[in-house]
Structure formats: C-alpha cells, structure tokens
Length: 159
Image (cartoon, rainbow, N blue to C red; front, top):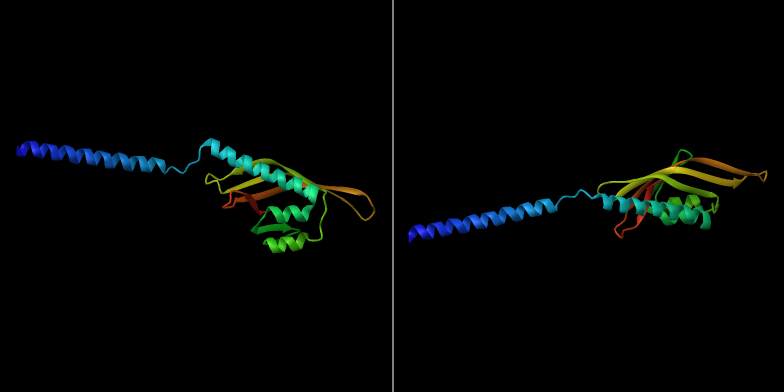
C-alpha cells in the first residue's frame, strides 16, 4: 500500500511540475514584444496619414495652426540654425506666419519596433511672394520625428 501511495504522490508531483513548466513556457512566449509585420505597417500608415494631415492643414489653415496642432508639448524645431524648444516657443515663432504656401509629402516612413517612435522624410515646397511681388519657391528636404501619445495620436517631437 505504501508503494502505491508513493507512486501516486510521484505522479501527482510530476503532473504538477509539468503544469508549472508549461505555464511558465506559455507566459514567456506570450511576453514576446516583437511586433508582427501587420502592427509595424499599421503604425507606419498612422504616421504617414498624420504627416499628410499636417501638410494639408498647413496648406489650408496656415503654418501657425498646423505646427501648433501637430507639435508635442516638448517638440523641438531647428530653423535658421536656431533651436526652438517647446510648444509655447513654437507658437510664438509661428504666431505671425500664417502663410499657406508650405506643402510636403513623406517619401519614407519608419517606426520603432516598440511602436512609440517613428520618423519621416521627404521633399517640401515653400512658396511665397517676395517684396517685388514675384512668387518664389523654396524646395528642400524635411525630416520629422514622431512620438505616439498615450491617447494613440502621433505628435512631432523634432522637425
């Protein structure tokens, strides 16, 4: 009888150990933080759409409105070799610039595997009328770094 009881205890212990090991294994494989391709493509799509909405707003409602709407609180701009830090300073910088002659489109979008940071770059065109009344077009390359906010929206942190 004692032998039978001993075998039952060993079997129960083995079953319990097997259950614990299987549970640990399942927990570990579920902790894989590597996003799948679908997630990465979705995040890239969100960033591309945000960049396009940003450009559209700049063209329709002006630079001031667009840059203050799409900037994060801690955003940084570099303009004319000068750093402009924070949304308040960005607002002040663009306050009197309601030009609607800026447009751009991302040629490239990428996102971190964590899904919280991404970046874009592409070509821009800035058209304005100079003091002689001539329309001038300034072209160049832009680079924007995007950060995903807790509410799921993307805001730029560097432009």
